[in-house]
Image 1 (cartoon, rainbow, N blue to C red):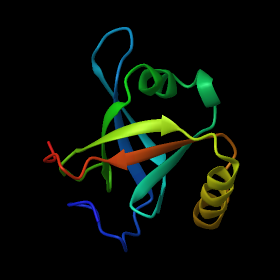
Image 2 (cartoon, rainbow, N blue to C red; image 1 turned 60 degrees about the vertical axis):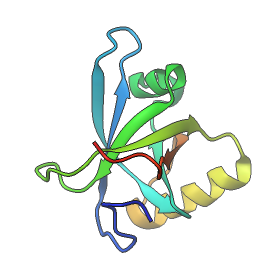
Image 3 (tube, one colour; image 1 turned 90 degrees about the vertical axis):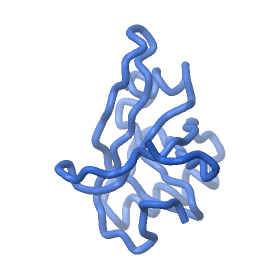
Length: 119
């Protein structure tokens, strides 16, 4: 389990921070997520056209936190990647459908770096 994130969290949002591929500045989005086996999954409705997907494809080092917008918590360092494996896409889509009733888009996996301290 990632420090600062409860397995039983009823949270609906994940805050993902990527590095802007043009500006080099941090860019944060609020997005629906699911957790599966210690990894976090989000879906880009606009697929590869989403700016944040383009950012993480350029630099896979990201930070994230789970919670409410007004909560202040540590950002967890992680690596992100687009998911192409059909079985994993299907499993994540199923979890998203159960939690949100929606799962149409490009699946992105966030793998927390459990060796690094949250920022």
